[in-house]
Length: 186
Image 1 (cartoon, rainbow, N blue to C red):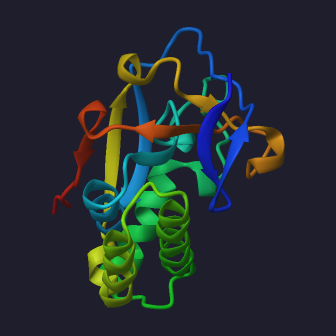
Image 2 (tube, one colour):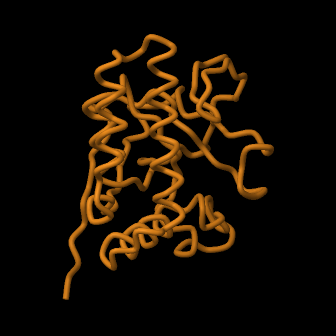
Image 3 (cartoon, rainbow, N blue to C red):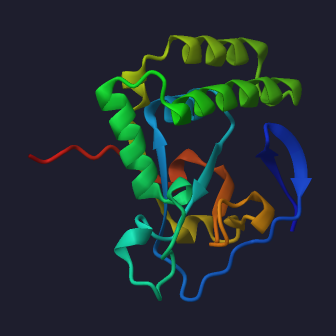
């Protein structure tokens, strides 16, 4: 199966295989932030998410699916990193810098591919320039697997952070997931 996905901010045809799970997970999890969510919701034709069948790889036993996920692929670890950056005002956070640059390039690539209008691409760039670090508060997407079955792609080894499996949904729609903004309990 060949799907159109965004890879290194260029649109390419990729033969990434559809992921298979036995047994299938109930949910796929993804960590993101308010800025990414707002931009995808208001300006992009769909959401492009890296996801996992477990929320926290460290919380499962060594023989379970998701054990040993690298930190850069683990939704819980990503959530904690973004939370620390946003709550402590870390304007030099490397993850936020990378996401800001990536979103700008995606907007320009979508414009070049005529997937969004020039006014929307300009708005994305301006929004990113003005987004304060506090706006990068993390969010979690809980994605029912049944809604995306057949569209979850297994990322080839050359594109993964480690030898552990990683997954992408290149065309997630707003009605296929629940965004969650957990609040801290004292």
